[in-house]
Image (cartoon, rainbow, N blue to C red; front, side, top):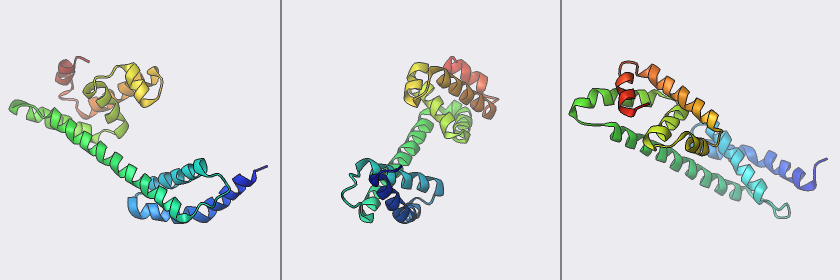
Amino acid sequence: MLSQRELAFIALYKDSYPRVHKFVLRRVDDSELAQELASDVFRIAWEKWDGATATEIPWLLAVARNLIGNAYRGRDRQKALTEKIIATATGGPGESGDNEAVENALAALRNKDRDVLQLAYWDDLTIAEIAQVLDCSQSAAKVRLHRAREAFRRLLPATWESLEQKVGA
């Protein structure tokens, strides 16, 4: 049996979700991200809602706007990090071909593979530290790193051996 608070929140969700979702979708232009952000709006509303005061659509849209801003900032940070990695990977004049191949291989990787490689090689973290950052077990982190290395190796077969010697992997 649902409590009065739960029933009232379900009614709020049914009435307001379409408007919140449209609001978010117009701003992010990605239906999957819009669904995730709209759901986060109602998660926050549930956490903050006392059931006595009415939660109005302007408040929900303000929460959505803040979450959209957070998503944009996260995307911008990821883009800046990728650019920094590419700039860092760019070496002397004799290495430009290798660096271009590495940059292309990194860009072609899935985000989660790129992230685990960055944690291991750019941030110089141990498996235990990577596991902590990724919020997983050490064995899962080790498997993720192994799979990311394999994906990178498939994308960059010609230069992998020389890169392995430089990194010492």
